Length: 191
Image 1 (cartoon, rainbow, N blue to C red):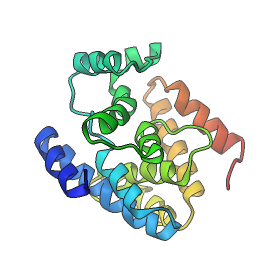
Image 2 (tube, rainbow, N blue to C red):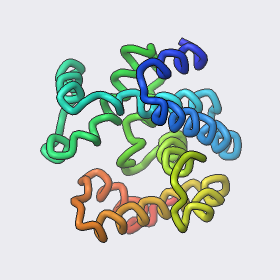
Image 3 (cartoon, one colour):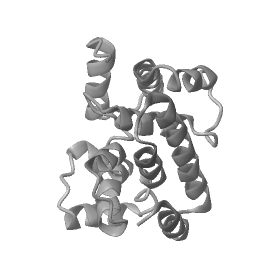
Image 4 (tube, rainbow, N blue to C red):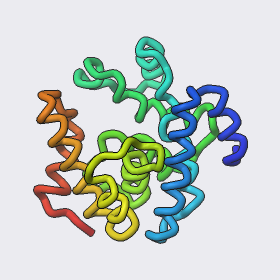
C-alpha cells in the first residue's frame, strides 16, 4: 500500500484533528530524515501511521491487543492510552500491509521511547512532539532547532521535559520511559 492509499484509509478512520496531526508528523519526519540521512519514505510512512490505533476506545484496544497476542503490562492496563503505540504497529502490519521492521519499531516506540533507539525510532518520537500542529510550549522552538541538528540532544531534551512535567503533575511515569531516560540521560549513551 502506498502513502496515498494509506492517507485515504487513515482519513476514514481517524478524527480530523488526529489525521491532521498524523500528516504533520509525516511531513516533519520526512524533513528530519533528509537532514539526518535516514530513509525518507520509511520516516514518512512511520510518521503517517504512528497513531493509526489511537482512536480505538479502551475496550477495543484491549481486545485488539489480545487478538494480535500483544503483551500488556500492569502499567499499560492501568494506562491503556499507551497501548496505541504497540497496537499501532500490529495494525500497520495487518491493515496497512507494512512489513518493514524499522517502520514497525518506530511506531511501537513513538510514545515511550526505548533504550538504544534507531535513528528512525528517534525521528518518529521527536516528530510526534514537534510537528507544526503541536501547542506551543516554552522550549519548543529550541527543541525544533535541535531536531534538525542533533537527534540525541533533542531526544534527551524531550525526555527530560516530559519526565519533569509528569513529576510536577504527580503523575506516574511509565517504566519504559524511565528506562529510556536512564539509558540516554543518565547513561550518556549518545552516538
